[in-house]
Length: 410
Image 1 (cartoon, rainbow, N blue to C red):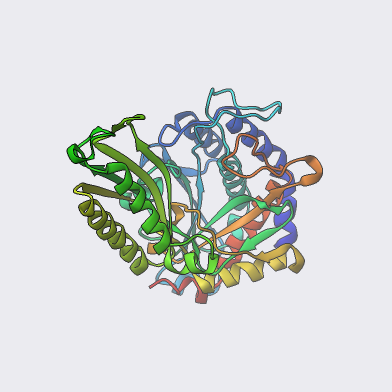
Image 2: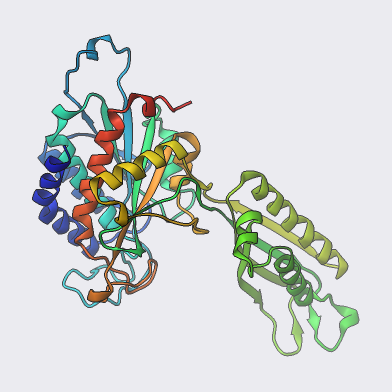
């Protein structure tokens, strides 16, 4: 099986590269992935792979059913169904790479690797479609819109009910933190939840030289930021990974030299790995903002927009995937990677279905390919995609034939 998949990955690699470059040239923002979806549908249709489209916007669910017959096939009351997921949207970034397939959409760029994700899931579908006689069960390929924008396409895909029969789900995400040829796994809580914090401090504005006629809105806002920073310090990674991370990126006090504004706006992000601590952090923001604003005769309107939950990699599934990756590659190229405070809407899936989101290394310093994601110079070593489609195919077949693993779904 390993050799057959490796050969198929080599065979489909040029096609996957061509798809990735086409997508990279024509990136589309979250929930606007119309042409991207059309390309995916054309590719699936060309291989007679069944699919449903226009799910959660431009989402597509392709389905391949295995044809393998085993001595126990007729005795089974159910057959395994697993899902493989990719995301399709790009980011509002102006690309600065000088490459032949540079983005043609002004101010839009695949700066997170979703073009490679989509191309690789298509490549994986092509391989597994050719190997239908090697498995008994159903594989669903989730081409998801809107990963980069709340509420996240994953939540909408789940709400549609198209994955209600899925027992396990896996996702593959590129990273410049690993070199091309490496993959990484982290069992348990892996990526943080994220919520958007909005605080508006209101009071009487007025002349800077007449404190008796106004409130200290700016001072109140500054004290709120300072107090919360003291409660949730960033200096110790162990502490903020345990208790939560809160950071403010916007502080707008639209006054001037001698004018204290009546309103000051704060915006920030909060991240945790634990739902109970997520609730505690929200409560502390509300309580602290209200108390400090009151000290200065002001009010604080706090609105925390709920974002993605944390990504929780099922430990048994992730350990199995890591060992299986070591079979497909070699042990030295399979890494245990640390938790990340960044977020991913794959968290929605992981809260509902046993899941594993793992990382595919795509950097290559020798080729000057080492920029971080969400930057204008991000790119990948495309050779990683041959490994990506081969590994995902191998993981899928090994998972689907493991009845004990499939039965882990509650």
